Image 1 (cartoon, rainbow, N blue to C red):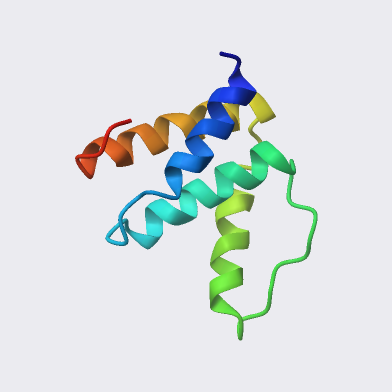
Image 2 (image 1 turned 120 degrees about the vertical axis):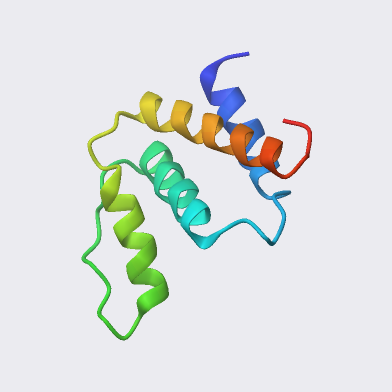
Amino acid sequence: MGLQEDFDQYAVKAKTLPDSTSNENKLILYGLFKQATVGPVNTSRPGMFNPRDRAKWDAWKNVEGKSKEEAMNDYITKVKQLLEEAGLAA
């Protein structure tokens, strides 16, 4: 399987992560997913009265220097790690 197919497969598997997955880990996945699918941040930072979207924007901004392939590989690795920690099949 190619990288894109693996990425798509793990994007589906990420939706099966337990609710107990920390917000920090969810934000890491979000940032990597956005970097892999959209590329560098292309919006302005949400205001302080929108903390949820601001945290998501910050997570995306944190991985801005990664190439699409790097972001995909890191995303797959992180989903595998979280699935194993949760005792689910990667």
